[in-house]
Length: 304
Ligand code: HSE
Image (cartoon, rainbow, N blue to C red; front, side, top):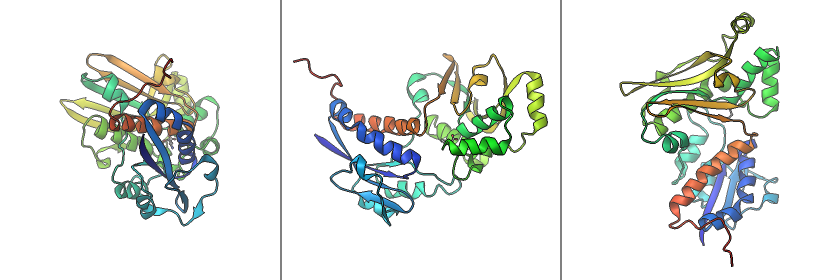
């Protein structure tokens, strides 16, 4: 059976959840892909663990100080790196340093565009791509919570970034939009080409006005394609209650893709975090496994 050695860089909530989920799915990987998937190393910003034979779940709670940094990842013997840490969107660090040190780094996959809408001409994308800002706007407009109190809830929930300005000022949405545009749609946009508006301009008066008008505000990353040219922006858009995007509540996220032939396709994500993010990373891992093993075997047991 072919062995796949995995290293996870970034060992906060998402990294830990990914490690545990990966270990719990080893039997699935054996049956479906004929792959012996081993977690050979994990590391956070200051500590980590490695074992060429594979780490077990009970060892994950005791990382050793000093086992970290790109050199540690490079020495871990990984075939596949799962990068699960926070990154500064200006420099890409520390995630970029780990990815550069890896020979086999996976790019994010844009499944909906890649598979479900294949062949269609894409006209527009609107995405509620950031859980924190959706949660904040929802809490401020429907529960009457102030910005600071709502942000504390988001931090307690573990989905706000360590520096929440990455969320509240729209940068996380902008990063996700750029990934979608550049890797999913073949655009070549840079952050400088995006107008990025966050929640800074949301005041009590604006909230009252939206309420009076009967519309729901959302922080949206939008991408339009005009004559083959992409334009991207991040800002607040308002929607009538009849619009599905108005009903994406709390920390849920959503995307609406408008194409020439299939009209609107909407996906709404409401997974429990950090499990949902871990599962999304491992979904990408399964695409890599299926591309690398010659003949995937069936998940069903032979009926002898
Ligand atoms: N801070 C991010 C969010 C976490 O609120 O969506 C998930 O990318």
